[in-house]
Image (cartoon, rainbow, N blue to C red):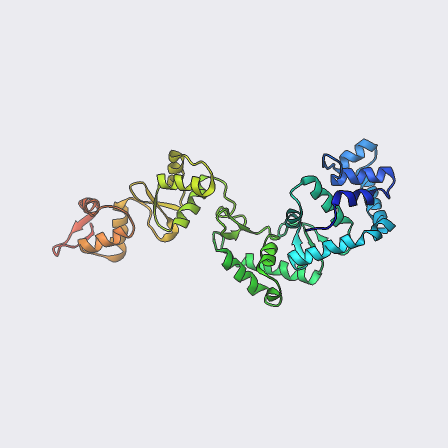
Length: 341
């Protein structure tokens, strides 16, 4: 993807510096053979100077490189990197995304990052609570994308999960003036600039801090599993599917215990769990019968069976047995059932 060898270029650029300035830059940016980076504090201690003095030497080194004939000689490579940012990100790209595209080697990535810092055809915006470190070639593009990302996040509900096509549609609507100029790949890379919007292991999108996106434990894996299934699942099946979907070992007993504790799930049959958000009522069959009769008034046996079966996966006889509790229910003269006085 790039025509030059980063390590060779950085060595050539560093050679224009005095020994101490070169050493400081090598340590700060991990340009040595082991790729280890050092703090200002650590470098200062090794030289017996302050952190601020190390920073001054670092700035001096970068500026000296930028003013050198060697920098001018290799300026085409910085133009190449600028074009790459334009090609991959439409003029704006998250730092980690750009480096991921260019190399998997941590040491090479350090050299590439150093070239980004030294180059002047592009600019860096530092990370903040909303956005990742990012590089841009056009400030107007950067501002438009960041505003659009902020608006998309603000319009997401806390626990909302949406498909990739839907998040892209919402994003396009916020980027109405420039979306048509860029392909889907660019839009996806722009989404990766946001710290507030994220994607879960199943490819669904939502607020990055939601447990539906930042999946941390069996409960969250179980929620995504049942949601994707779309109908009630037995806890044993939930555990097995977690392992299949996520490659995460889920013990059956542990899964069952977590489902019982989590308000996002409702027991709707013998070992069967549904999502509360689907409208199922919490409680045993007797509780469901009580709530239905409180809301609907007297109902026939057939009507009650039909309504309970929409809430619970139980046999008809189980419903009828529960109706025999005369402390809670009473049978009227016409054969229908109501709540006892």
